[in-house]
Image 1 (cartoon, one colour):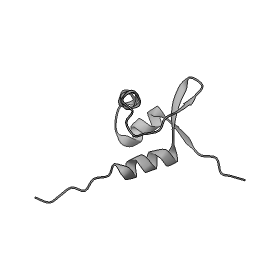
Image 2 (cartoon, one colour):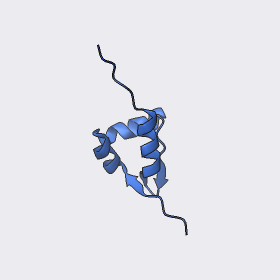
Image 3 (cartoon, helix red, strand yellow):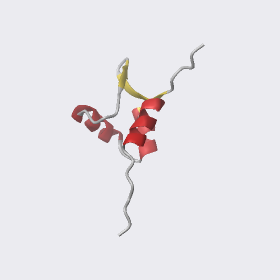
Image 4 (cartoon, one colour):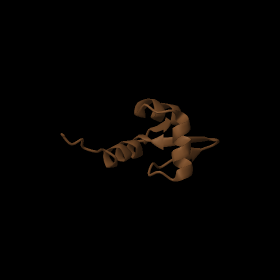
Length: 64
């Protein structure tokens, strides 16, 4: 049997990223590279997609 993918609420995602939920709504509207899933009347983000988004958007700070 295939494992179910965990879906996170926007509040959970915002808390994890340290941003406000409103920022996520802006990202959706601006089509920022984070995949949203509509479940009924609410938006969710899969844990896998969130981890991929974080991985793609990591940057290295350079020493001065």
